[in-house]
Amino acid sequence: MCTVNHPMSARPSYLIDAPVASLTPQSIFTRVLAPHRGVGLTCEQIEGLLDVSREFHERQLVVCLEFAQVTEALELKRGRVDSQAVALRQALLHRHAQLFLEHERIFFEAAQRGHDLMTDEQIERADTIYHAEKDDMLDTLSDSLNHAIGPNFVIAVANAETAGAVAATA
Image 1 (cartoon, rainbow, N blue to C red):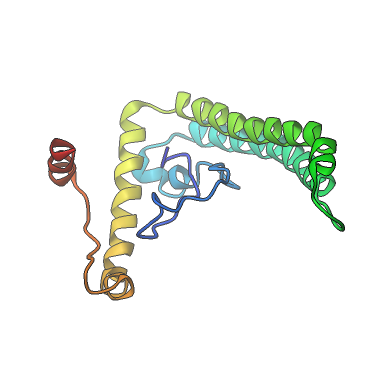
Image 2: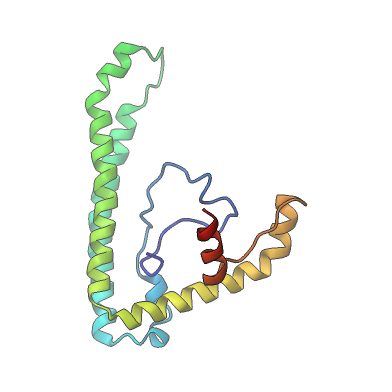
């Protein structure tokens, strides 16, 4: 999913303390469109990805606006939270959950539509470019990250070899 975009960060603990939040980004395919020459995208593919991105954003905006309205209605601004206050909000809680699910669903649908426009080789090239750039950026931060997490831990870069070793011990 890295070629579509996702908001998970490069924090050392992002897989441990992931918040209950949408993985849907504000914009999609920037990680493919920025290096479009290196990925080998044609003009038609670029236009197609931009169209998918625009349509995704339009649908996302509709969901986000209703989500904000439901969130506001759920908020208890004063008084006690008791069983009656919770009961009065059950329909809103269900709608909140439905909107969250819709938000995620439109992301995956757009991701599929965008990837359908690309070849497997282009997706692989985009993955390679993105991860190399990300690793280069993390390398420049490794000393700071290692000092920030304390003397007993070290940030390690995973590769196919280390991932296999970890999987074998699990």
